[in-house]
Length: 137
Image (tube, rainbow, N blue to C red; front, side):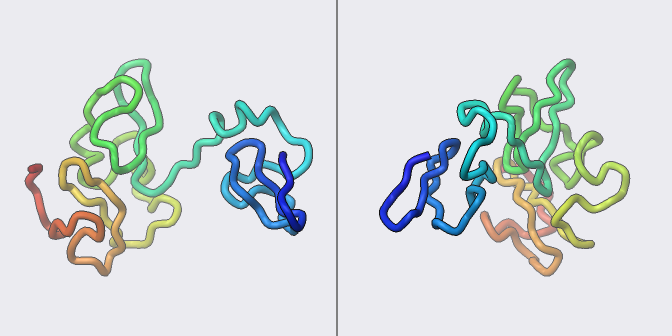
């Protein structure tokens, strides 16, 4: 950890500058004093967000962000069910809403987008594709 003027400090794990009053990094949660090896801390901290999916390819099971249409680890395409909302191995496959979701929220089906949208939106906030779009341009 390095210190700046006024007692603010820079996180050893992610290099985020934090106010003096913080005991943990605002960005990654690494403690101000002590803590695990900073070099491996960020690598092991994966947070699953709404719409994220797990690769279903044999022996992969990598965690992928909702916006990815193919697995970052093995390149396998996201299965068809995941593109429409939930994959068989993603949050919600048991009928429950993922963390941070409300009833009616949806994932953009446009190829390459795949972001989480609130139920009140009639078009994707990122790419402006209509909610009922079923193509893949």
